[in-house]
Length: 481
Image (cartoon, rainbow, N blue to C red; front, side, top):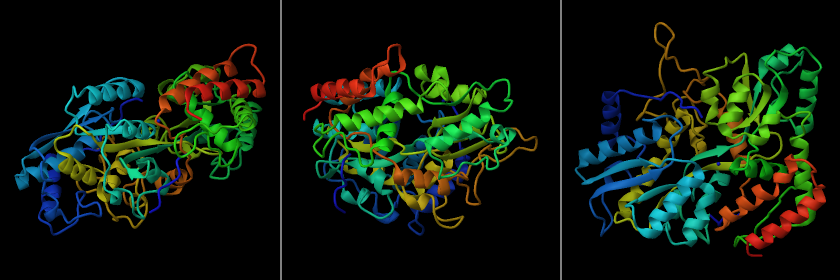
């Protein structure tokens, strides 16, 4: 594989399986007769338990942000499954998940401080895809075997997030991509003949649908066409990069070494597109101060007909809406790729076994489990194949309905237990998604972009050209060029 070019809610119910069934599934995999999550297309289960020379037995500590599938979510369940396997083999190794508090920026600062000062014994870190170049350049994470991503199964756009400076430094764990949620019932009520926009909807078409909604009597809660995340944090960067990439095909703001290579004219085109997308005639006023949680709440309250958000909210929203009310489609234009990747730390005393754990957690069946639980899987095999292809057996397909209907799984699913939108909406969106600029100085890039775009939503807004010139000068100060 040639190195790819370089170019982010409310708690939801778990996909829980009883401990007895979990033991049966994992122990069956440990016998070596069948393939389980530990295989991941790598070594057979029966031969995967040896530690690398020099590995110190004990706990492999995995540091991660919050699992959106809940307190005892799918990540912890997969780690528990690996632990059961290791207990059976008496390997002397166990894994322990540590969930870091705070926002993504706060978690990044905690991890950087802990690894640089060696104040925490983290063996594996779960990094936002934008952090990989920074941690790799600082020698805080170790190169990994290329076969973790160098195969035909990992989605190419997702695999690209694992590389830096010609080496694989992380393995894609769960992905993410911008999607468009919409109120099917609102569109039907306004007389829209095709209330499911589908993959061919562009932003002009979206504005046209909003105009139709505004021309007809709307539910009392409805205020404006759509909402998104435009507050002064990473959400604004994501929306801006999506607009820029939609306006300027093949836009690159940094080169393969992370140097700024932007162009004022291209920046002006991107700013103009972002301005069009956020016009007050179509956009909820509160969007300029909204993050993921507030925009989700505004949509759930019926204030808008459209919402730009992440796959993790598919399950959350179907606890509020029925299939007759809610739909999901690819985001018009280009959507930004998000997600988290697993990396082995430079301070780990268990690098070999930690790599084996990562192979387990990112293998084919583990990815299927992550998809069924509500994450965006990183492997094509999780989305495709027949109903039982690579079915999640270590964790189970999800909660079943009780006799009273309480606790029923609200997610529309296909016959194999995957979310119904996964193959036709989520997978194509991931394949076409764009990266945010890949640079060891990503923190400086995103903070500069957030700050420089602030006047776009205030009084006395400068022209697109003037704002582009200011942004260009600021980025040249923030990044090498």
